[in-house]
Amino acid sequence: MMCAASVSMFHHYYVRGYAMTETSISIDTELLAEARKIAGTTTNQAAIDHALRDLVEREAASAEFDRIVERELGDTKVTLEF
Image (cartoon, rainbow, N blue to C red; front, side):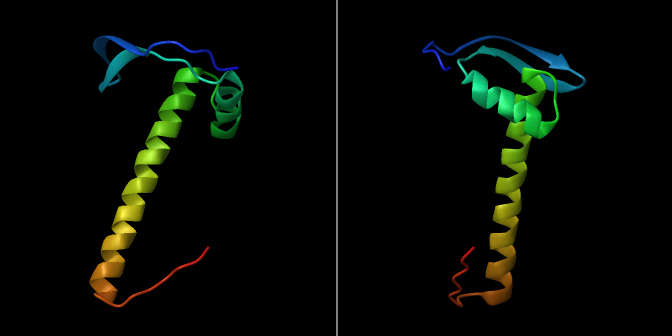
């Protein structure tokens, strides 16, 4: 169940060389539990980190794919359906 609450940042710190920001947010607990299961993690922090890294990696891969298609096909119009 997701509860309404404000998002607030408290302070910055480093863990294993990563810059971290402590943030208070409201998250759907069932969705978070499912994300932990899918990611194979045991903590909320690890599940959220996994999800954010996955999102960034997928977007980077999509942008790289677009660059390759543009380079190889130029102005040729291609429609891909999945």
